[in-house]
Image (tube, rainbow, N blue to C red; front, top):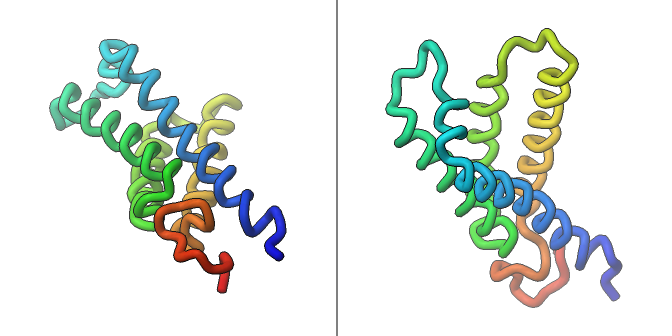
Length: 134
């Protein structure tokens, strides 16, 4: 019989990780003007409104796909690139807060790489009614 780690841990992990991106995307969408202002920097060469809409769409759509378990491997790799870009968008790592945010981004990248390597697990549309991991 399968144990808890084989059946429910991937589901809970997907919900928590995808929920993080979904929550951030919804919150940033509700505060759209301040999100656009926070993205604009001195060397920003792309239209900030278009870039913000694109980033919010990536967060919300990939967050939903990760929660549901659809295309979990490519979605997690898309989110890895997204988080790497966001991590390097932080200002200099001179304060404790920016260091903590940078380390948080690295931890999220690690979790997403784990999902990209091992898939969504059970309780996903990709599961083929066989034991997870075999």
